[in-house]
Amino acid sequence: MADLDLGEQIAHLHATFRSIVDVLDLPGLEEKIADLEQKAAAPDLWDDAEAAQRVTSALSHAQARLKKVRELSSRLEDLPVLIELANAEGDEDARAEATSEYESLRQAVDDLEVQTLLNGEYDERPAVVTIRAGAGGVDAADFAEMLLRMYARWSEKHGYALTVMDTSYAEEAGIKSATFEVDFPYAFGTLSVEAGTHRLVRMSPFNSAGKRQTSFAAVEVIPLMEETDHIDIPESDIRVDVFRSSGPGGQSVNTTDSAVRITHLPTGIVVSMQNEKSQIQNRAAAMRVLQSRLLLLQREQEAATKKELAGTITASWGDQMRSYVLAPYQMVKDLRTGYEVNNPQAVFDGDLDGFIAAGIRWRKHQEQENS
Image (cartoon, rainbow, N blue to C red; front, side, top):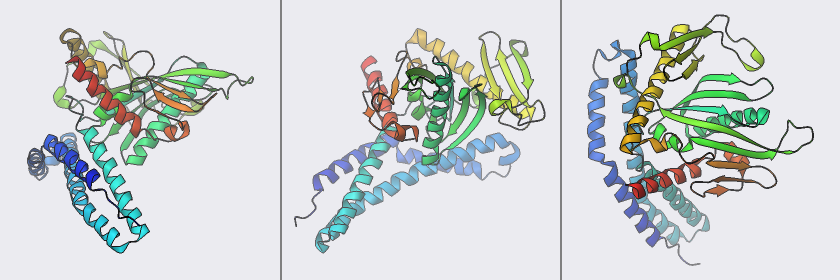
C-alpha cells in the first residue's frame, strides 16, 4: 500500500497560515491582552459594571483568538509527524486519522483566513439582528420564525451567546418580527452578510389546496454600539410606550407593564424591548439599540456623500439575496455569491458557515473592485 503523501498540501497550508498570522499581528494582540489584563486587575473595576463587562469580554475574546492561533500552529507542526507515524505503521486506520486531521486543519485555517477579511470599523462589535416577515401572509410569518430558529441553531452549534430581545408574534402562526443580540468576536462583521431579503418557496402547509407559495422575510443586522459612541437623543425626540410582555397567542408572560417601545419621532425608528424583567432595564436596552441604529444611520448618510461603508450594512444587493426552495426541488442558493447547497433542512438547522464565508469573501472582492 502506497504511503500517504500530503507534503505539497501541507506546505500550502503552512504558507496560508503564515500569511494569516502576519495579518493578525500577534505581537499587537499580545500587547492588547496585556493591557486588558492590567485593566481587569484594577481594584475598582466593578465600580462600573458595564465598563467592567466590556473589559472582561474584550479580554476573553482576545485570549480566545490568540489561543486558537497557537493551537493551530501546534497542530500544523505535529501533522507531518502524525503522517510519518501512520506510514511507518502501515495501518489504514492511522492513515485515515492523519487524513482527517489534515482536512480538519484545512477547514480551520480557511475559517481563520475568512476572519482576517473582517476589518471594518464596527466588525468586532456584537450584532443586533432583526427579522421581519414580509410579503406572503401567514407563510411569511412562519418563514420569519424559521429564520429565527436557523440563527439560534447556528449560534448554538458554535457556542455563541444569543439573547432574544423582543418578539412580536403573528396571530395564526410564526412571528411578525424578532430582534436578538449575538455576542462573539467579530459578530457584526460575520453576520452582516446575512442582511437582506430572504425568499422561501414551498408547498404551503397553511393552504388547504396545497399550492406552492412564495414568501419573503427581511433580515437587518446592525453593530451594537458602546457608550463611548454616545449620540445625544433629546427627550422631546422620543415617545415611550409601556405595555405587558406577551407570548404566543397573546398569553401574558408578565403581570406588569415592563415591556417598552421607544419611537424616535424625527426618523420614525421604533425599538421594542421585553426581554428584561423591569421597565427600567428594558428602557435602557431599547435606548442602546436606538443609539446603534441612529449612529448607523448617521454613518450611512456620511457614506452616501463619501461613497464608503454603507453598502454592506444596508443590504444593498437588491430585493432578494438568498432563496430557500423546498418545492418542486430542494435548494438554498445565495444570489450574490452563487454558493448553493441541496439540503435546505441542514441550512435551517444552522448549517450556515459556507454561506457566511462565501458572503464575506464576495464582499471583500466587491470592496476591492470599487476601491
